[in-house]
Image (cartoon, rainbow, N blue to C red; front, side, top):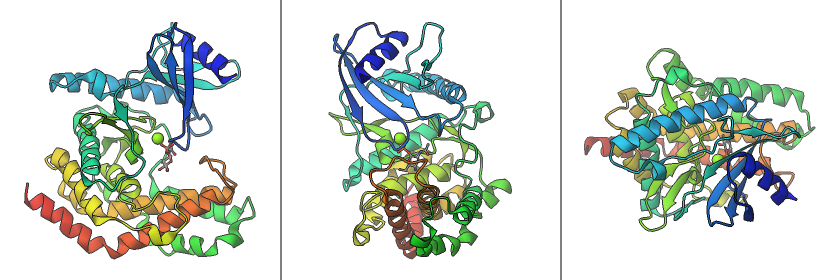
Length: 366
Ligand code: GN1
Ligand code: MG
Protein backbone atom coordinates (compact mmCIF):
# COMPACT_ATOMS: atom_id res chain seq x y z
CA UNK A 1 0.00 0.00 0.00
CA UNK A 2 2.62 2.53 1.10
CA UNK A 3 4.83 1.44 -1.81
CA UNK A 4 2.07 2.39 -4.26
CA UNK A 5 1.79 5.81 -2.71
CA UNK A 6 5.57 6.18 -2.61
CA UNK A 7 5.86 5.17 -6.28
CA UNK A 8 3.41 7.90 -7.17
CA UNK A 9 5.24 10.48 -5.05
CA UNK A 10 8.67 9.52 -6.37
CA UNK A 11 7.33 9.63 -9.96
CA UNK A 12 6.04 13.16 -9.43
CA UNK A 13 9.40 14.16 -8.00
CA UNK A 14 11.18 13.04 -11.16
CA UNK A 15 12.30 9.54 -10.10
CA UNK A 16 11.27 7.38 -13.02
CA UNK A 17 12.58 4.01 -11.78
CA UNK A 18 10.12 1.97 -9.68
CA UNK A 19 10.80 1.29 -6.01
CA UNK A 20 12.56 -1.93 -5.09
CA UNK A 21 12.47 -1.41 -1.34
CA UNK A 22 11.11 1.17 1.15
CA UNK A 23 11.97 1.16 4.84
CA UNK A 24 10.63 3.53 7.47
CA UNK A 25 13.37 5.38 9.39
CA UNK A 26 12.27 6.03 12.96
CA UNK A 27 14.67 8.75 14.08
CA UNK A 28 12.53 11.90 14.30
CA UNK A 29 9.52 12.65 16.46
CA UNK A 30 7.70 14.81 13.91
CA UNK A 31 7.91 13.87 10.21
CA UNK A 32 7.52 10.38 8.72
CA UNK A 33 10.60 9.29 6.76
CA UNK A 34 11.27 6.43 4.34
CA UNK A 35 14.56 5.28 2.90
CA UNK A 36 13.64 4.30 -0.65
CA UNK A 37 15.76 2.25 -3.02
CA UNK A 38 14.84 2.12 -6.70
CA UNK A 39 15.66 -0.71 -9.12
CA UNK A 40 18.61 1.21 -10.59
CA UNK A 41 20.29 1.06 -7.16
CA UNK A 42 19.74 4.73 -6.29
CA UNK A 43 18.54 5.74 -2.83
CA UNK A 44 16.37 8.61 -1.61
CA UNK A 45 14.96 9.86 1.67
CA UNK A 46 11.25 10.45 1.13
CA UNK A 47 9.44 12.37 3.86
CA UNK A 48 5.86 13.15 4.71
CA UNK A 49 5.91 16.61 6.27
CA UNK A 50 3.89 16.87 9.47
CA UNK A 51 1.63 19.78 8.58
CA UNK A 52 0.14 19.96 12.07
CA UNK A 53 3.61 21.09 13.16
CA UNK A 54 4.76 22.79 9.94
CA UNK A 55 1.74 24.76 8.84
CA UNK A 56 3.41 26.46 5.87
CA UNK A 57 5.38 23.86 3.89
CA UNK A 58 5.96 26.37 1.07
CA UNK A 59 7.84 28.74 3.37
CA UNK A 60 9.66 25.86 4.99
CA UNK A 61 10.90 24.53 1.64
CA UNK A 62 11.78 28.04 0.47
CA UNK A 63 14.04 28.41 3.52
CA UNK A 64 15.65 25.05 2.83
CA UNK A 65 16.19 25.83 -0.87
CA UNK A 66 17.84 29.16 -0.08
CA UNK A 67 20.03 27.78 2.66
CA UNK A 68 21.19 24.70 0.73
CA UNK A 69 21.87 26.85 -2.35
CA UNK A 70 24.00 29.24 -0.27
CA UNK A 71 25.79 26.40 1.49
CA UNK A 72 26.56 24.69 -1.81
CA UNK A 73 28.35 27.82 -3.03
CA UNK A 74 30.30 28.24 0.18
CA UNK A 75 31.30 24.58 0.27
CA UNK A 76 32.48 24.71 -3.33
CA UNK A 77 34.53 27.85 -2.65
CA UNK A 78 36.24 26.09 0.24
CA UNK A 79 37.27 23.24 -2.06
CA UNK A 80 34.98 20.67 -0.40
CA UNK A 81 32.30 18.61 -2.15
CA UNK A 82 28.87 20.32 -2.11
CA UNK A 83 27.05 17.11 -3.06
CA UNK A 84 28.50 15.45 0.01
CA UNK A 85 28.22 18.27 2.51
CA UNK A 86 24.69 19.53 1.91
CA UNK A 87 21.36 17.99 0.99
CA UNK A 88 19.92 18.00 -2.53
CA UNK A 89 16.11 18.05 -2.70
CA UNK A 90 14.24 16.77 -5.74
CA UNK A 91 11.93 18.95 -7.79
CA UNK A 92 8.53 18.41 -9.41
CA UNK A 93 7.94 19.19 -13.09
CA UNK A 94 6.88 22.71 -12.09
CA UNK A 95 10.08 23.25 -10.18
CA UNK A 96 8.55 22.89 -6.72
CA UNK A 97 10.49 21.10 -4.01
CA UNK A 98 7.45 19.48 -2.41
CA UNK A 99 4.24 17.83 -3.44
CA UNK A 100 0.71 17.90 -2.01
CA UNK A 101 -1.40 14.84 -2.79
CA UNK A 102 -5.18 14.80 -3.26
CA UNK A 103 -5.58 13.49 0.29
CA UNK A 104 -3.81 16.63 1.52
CA UNK A 105 -0.56 14.93 2.59
CA UNK A 106 2.63 16.84 1.79
CA UNK A 107 5.81 15.10 0.64
CA UNK A 108 9.39 15.85 -0.36
CA UNK A 109 12.51 13.85 -1.11
CA UNK A 110 16.27 14.28 -1.06
CA UNK A 111 19.12 12.24 -2.41
CA UNK A 112 20.38 9.74 0.18
CA UNK A 113 24.05 10.08 1.10
CA UNK A 114 25.83 6.80 0.55
CA UNK A 115 28.45 5.53 2.98
CA UNK A 116 26.94 7.45 5.85
CA UNK A 117 25.45 6.68 9.24
CA UNK A 118 23.66 8.50 12.04
CA UNK A 119 24.15 8.17 15.79
CA UNK A 120 21.39 8.54 18.39
CA UNK A 121 23.72 8.65 21.37
CA UNK A 122 27.42 8.16 21.90
CA UNK A 123 30.10 7.88 24.56
CA UNK A 124 32.81 8.33 21.97
CA UNK A 125 34.45 11.71 22.57
CA UNK A 126 35.82 11.96 19.04
CA UNK A 127 32.41 11.29 17.50
CA UNK A 128 30.81 14.02 19.58
CA UNK A 129 33.65 16.45 18.92
CA UNK A 130 33.18 15.86 15.23
CA UNK A 131 29.44 16.64 15.56
CA UNK A 132 30.42 19.89 17.31
CA UNK A 133 32.68 20.77 14.39
CA UNK A 134 29.95 20.02 11.86
CA UNK A 135 27.32 22.16 13.59
CA UNK A 136 29.92 24.89 14.13
CA UNK A 137 30.88 24.79 10.45
CA UNK A 138 27.21 24.98 9.53
CA UNK A 139 26.84 28.22 11.48
CA UNK A 140 30.12 29.62 10.18
CA UNK A 141 29.25 28.92 6.56
CA UNK A 142 25.90 30.67 6.98
CA UNK A 143 27.41 33.64 8.80
CA UNK A 144 27.04 35.95 5.80
CA UNK A 145 23.62 34.63 4.76
CA UNK A 146 20.99 37.43 4.63
CA UNK A 147 19.16 36.22 7.71
CA UNK A 148 16.18 38.57 7.23
CA UNK A 149 15.21 36.61 4.11
CA UNK A 150 14.33 33.53 6.14
CA UNK A 151 10.77 32.75 7.17
CA UNK A 152 9.98 31.83 10.75
CA UNK A 153 8.77 28.30 9.99
CA UNK A 154 7.43 27.81 13.50
CA UNK A 155 6.73 31.08 15.24
CA UNK A 156 8.50 31.59 18.57
CA UNK A 157 10.10 28.16 18.29
CA UNK A 158 12.78 28.77 20.91
CA UNK A 159 11.17 31.80 22.50
CA UNK A 160 11.46 30.33 25.99
CA UNK A 161 9.35 32.97 27.81
CA UNK A 162 6.55 32.38 25.26
CA UNK A 163 6.96 28.61 25.65
CA UNK A 164 6.62 29.15 29.39
CA UNK A 165 3.38 31.12 29.10
CA UNK A 166 1.99 28.48 26.69
CA UNK A 167 2.96 25.84 29.24
CA UNK A 168 1.14 27.69 32.05
CA UNK A 169 -1.97 27.88 29.87
CA UNK A 170 -1.86 24.13 29.30
CA UNK A 171 -1.52 23.55 33.04
CA UNK A 172 -4.55 25.78 33.58
CA UNK A 173 -6.61 24.04 30.85
CA UNK A 174 -5.63 20.53 31.95
CA UNK A 175 -7.20 19.25 28.75
CA UNK A 176 -6.32 15.58 29.21
CA UNK A 177 -7.07 15.58 32.95
CA UNK A 178 -3.47 14.67 33.77
CA UNK A 179 -2.43 17.63 35.91
CA UNK A 180 -2.80 15.74 39.19
CA UNK A 181 -0.33 13.11 37.94
CA UNK A 182 2.51 15.59 37.38
CA UNK A 183 2.31 18.28 40.08
CA UNK A 184 5.93 17.78 41.08
CA UNK A 185 7.11 18.21 37.50
CA UNK A 186 4.97 21.33 37.04
CA UNK A 187 6.54 22.76 40.19
CA UNK A 188 10.00 21.96 38.85
CA UNK A 189 9.27 24.24 35.91
CA UNK A 190 7.58 27.10 37.79
CA UNK A 191 10.44 27.20 40.33
CA UNK A 192 12.68 28.13 37.41
CA UNK A 193 10.51 30.89 35.95
CA UNK A 194 13.34 33.41 36.46
CA UNK A 195 15.54 31.50 34.02
CA UNK A 196 13.09 31.60 31.13
CA UNK A 197 13.82 35.19 30.13
CA UNK A 198 17.60 35.27 30.59
CA UNK A 199 18.71 34.77 26.98
CA UNK A 200 15.73 36.56 25.45
CA UNK A 201 16.50 39.66 27.54
CA UNK A 202 20.11 39.76 26.30
CA UNK A 203 18.85 39.20 22.74
CA UNK A 204 16.31 42.02 22.95
CA UNK A 205 18.96 44.32 24.44
CA UNK A 206 21.09 43.65 21.37
CA UNK A 207 23.78 41.81 23.36
CA UNK A 208 23.29 38.56 21.46
CA UNK A 209 23.17 38.73 17.63
CA UNK A 210 20.59 37.16 15.31
CA UNK A 211 22.09 34.33 13.31
CA UNK A 212 20.93 31.66 10.91
CA UNK A 213 20.39 28.77 13.28
CA UNK A 214 19.40 25.15 12.83
CA UNK A 215 17.26 24.95 15.97
CA UNK A 216 17.17 21.15 16.18
CA UNK A 217 20.79 20.15 16.64
CA UNK A 218 20.24 16.66 17.97
CA UNK A 219 23.16 14.34 17.46
CA UNK A 220 21.11 12.29 14.99
CA UNK A 221 20.70 15.35 12.77
CA UNK A 222 24.23 15.07 11.43
CA UNK A 223 25.58 12.43 9.05
CA UNK A 224 28.87 10.61 9.69
CA UNK A 225 31.12 9.14 7.04
CA UNK A 226 31.43 5.32 7.13
CA UNK A 227 35.15 5.42 6.36
CA UNK A 228 36.51 8.47 8.15
CA UNK A 229 33.93 8.46 11.02
CA UNK A 230 33.83 12.26 10.64
CA UNK A 231 30.56 14.23 10.72
CA UNK A 232 30.18 15.75 7.27
CA UNK A 233 26.61 16.92 6.65
CA UNK A 234 23.97 18.59 8.80
CA UNK A 235 20.46 17.34 8.03
CA UNK A 236 16.84 18.03 9.12
CA UNK A 237 16.77 21.64 7.98
CA UNK A 238 13.07 22.19 8.71
CA UNK A 239 13.64 24.58 11.57
CA UNK A 240 16.46 26.62 10.01
CA UNK A 241 15.41 30.14 10.99
CA UNK A 242 16.72 33.36 12.46
CA UNK A 243 17.77 32.62 16.05
CA UNK A 244 20.54 32.57 18.64
CA UNK A 245 23.69 30.46 18.31
CA UNK A 246 22.98 29.43 21.91
CA UNK A 247 19.86 27.53 20.86
CA UNK A 248 21.98 25.25 18.73
CA UNK A 249 24.80 24.78 21.19
CA UNK A 250 22.45 24.16 24.12
CA UNK A 251 20.25 21.75 22.22
CA UNK A 252 23.22 19.68 21.04
CA UNK A 253 24.35 19.24 24.63
CA UNK A 254 20.83 18.50 25.81
CA UNK A 255 20.65 15.55 23.45
CA UNK A 256 24.25 14.45 22.99
CA UNK A 257 25.89 15.08 26.38
CA UNK A 258 23.06 13.34 28.24
CA UNK A 259 24.54 10.10 29.55
CA UNK A 260 21.27 8.35 28.66
CA UNK A 261 18.60 8.45 25.96
CA UNK A 262 16.13 11.32 26.13
CA UNK A 263 13.38 8.90 27.13
CA UNK A 264 15.36 6.76 29.60
CA UNK A 265 13.00 6.18 32.55
CA UNK A 266 15.71 5.21 35.07
CA UNK A 267 16.76 8.67 36.21
CA UNK A 268 19.87 7.35 37.99
CA UNK A 269 21.31 6.87 34.52
CA UNK A 270 20.65 10.47 33.47
CA UNK A 271 23.39 13.05 33.97
CA UNK A 272 25.44 15.55 32.00
CA UNK A 273 28.67 13.93 30.85
CA UNK A 274 31.33 16.63 31.24
CA UNK A 275 33.85 14.82 29.04
CA UNK A 276 31.31 14.87 26.23
CA UNK A 277 30.59 18.53 27.01
CA UNK A 278 34.31 19.33 26.70
CA UNK A 279 34.72 17.43 23.43
CA UNK A 280 31.74 18.99 21.70
CA UNK A 281 32.76 22.47 22.89
CA UNK A 282 36.28 21.95 21.52
CA UNK A 283 34.89 20.92 18.13
CA UNK A 284 32.28 23.67 18.03
CA UNK A 285 34.62 26.49 19.10
CA UNK A 286 37.37 25.36 16.73
CA UNK A 287 35.01 26.49 13.95
CA UNK A 288 33.15 29.37 15.57
CA UNK A 289 35.27 31.06 18.25
CA UNK A 290 36.33 33.83 15.87
CA UNK A 291 32.76 34.79 14.99
CA UNK A 292 31.03 34.39 18.36
CA UNK A 293 30.74 37.42 20.65
CA UNK A 294 32.03 37.33 24.23
CA UNK A 295 28.44 37.30 25.54
CA UNK A 296 27.62 34.28 23.39
CA UNK A 297 30.69 32.46 24.69
CA UNK A 298 29.86 33.39 28.29
CA UNK A 299 26.32 32.05 27.91
CA UNK A 300 27.30 28.64 26.48
CA UNK A 301 26.97 26.76 29.82
CA UNK A 302 23.66 28.42 30.69
CA UNK A 303 22.26 27.58 27.24
CA UNK A 304 22.61 23.87 28.05
CA UNK A 305 20.40 24.30 31.09
CA UNK A 306 17.86 26.53 29.35
CA UNK A 307 17.44 24.41 26.22
CA UNK A 308 17.02 21.30 28.36
CA UNK A 309 14.47 23.04 30.57
CA UNK A 310 12.61 24.29 27.50
CA UNK A 311 12.49 20.85 25.90
CA UNK A 312 11.33 19.20 29.13
CA UNK A 313 8.64 21.85 29.45
CA UNK A 314 7.50 21.13 25.86
CA UNK A 315 7.27 17.40 26.59
CA UNK A 316 5.31 18.09 29.78
CA UNK A 317 2.99 20.50 27.96
CA UNK A 318 2.29 17.86 25.33
CA UNK A 319 1.55 15.31 28.06
CA UNK A 320 -0.92 17.78 29.63
CA UNK A 321 -2.50 18.51 26.22
CA UNK A 322 -3.03 14.80 25.47
CA UNK A 323 -0.01 14.03 23.25
CA UNK A 324 -0.80 16.04 20.14
CA UNK A 325 2.68 17.11 19.06
CA UNK A 326 5.45 14.57 19.68
CA UNK A 327 5.19 11.00 18.43
CA UNK A 328 4.74 8.67 21.42
CA UNK A 329 5.05 4.93 21.85
CA UNK A 330 3.10 4.55 25.13
CA UNK A 331 0.72 6.81 27.10
CA UNK A 332 3.27 8.15 29.64
CA UNK A 333 6.02 8.63 27.07
CA UNK A 334 6.00 12.44 27.14
CA UNK A 335 5.97 12.48 30.95
CA UNK A 336 8.95 10.11 31.02
CA UNK A 337 10.77 12.36 28.55
CA UNK A 338 9.99 15.44 30.66
CA UNK A 339 11.26 13.79 33.87
CA UNK A 340 14.42 12.77 32.06
CA UNK A 341 15.05 16.35 30.85
CA UNK A 342 14.40 17.77 34.33
CA UNK A 343 16.90 15.37 35.87
CA UNK A 344 19.39 16.61 33.30
CA UNK A 345 18.55 20.23 34.19
CA UNK A 346 19.24 19.55 37.89
CA UNK A 347 22.54 17.90 37.09
CA UNK A 348 23.49 20.76 34.76
CA UNK A 349 22.76 23.27 37.53
CA UNK A 350 25.22 21.50 39.80
CA UNK A 351 27.89 21.53 37.07
CA UNK A 352 27.60 25.14 35.91
CA UNK A 353 30.95 26.23 37.42
CA UNK A 354 32.78 23.27 35.93
CA UNK A 355 31.28 23.95 32.52
CA UNK A 356 32.33 27.59 32.73
CA UNK A 357 35.90 26.53 33.58
CA UNK A 358 35.96 24.11 30.65
CA UNK A 359 34.80 26.79 28.19
CA UNK A 360 37.36 29.32 29.52
CA UNK A 361 40.11 26.77 29.32
CA UNK A 362 39.34 25.90 25.72
CA UNK A 363 39.12 29.57 24.71
CA UNK A 364 42.41 30.40 26.47
CA UNK A 365 44.24 27.80 24.38
CA UNK A 366 43.00 29.22 21.07
C1 GN1 B 1 11.66 17.09 17.51
O1 GN1 B 1 11.66 15.41 14.94
P1 GN1 B 1 12.93 15.62 15.67
O2 GN1 B 1 13.22 14.48 16.56
O3 GN1 B 1 14.09 15.99 14.77
C2 GN1 B 1 11.43 18.60 17.71
C3 GN1 B 1 12.62 19.21 18.44
C4 GN1 B 1 12.83 18.51 19.77
C5 GN1 B 1 13.01 17.01 19.52
C6 GN1 B 1 13.10 16.27 20.83
C7 GN1 B 1 10.05 20.62 14.88
O4 GN1 B 1 12.73 16.93 16.63
O5 GN1 B 1 12.38 20.58 18.67
O6 GN1 B 1 13.96 19.03 20.43
O7 GN1 B 1 11.91 16.48 18.76
N1 GN1 B 1 11.23 19.24 16.43
C8 GN1 B 1 10.19 20.09 16.23
O8 GN1 B 1 13.53 14.98 20.59
O9 GN1 B 1 9.42 20.40 17.13
MG1 MG C 1 15.05 15.52 13.25
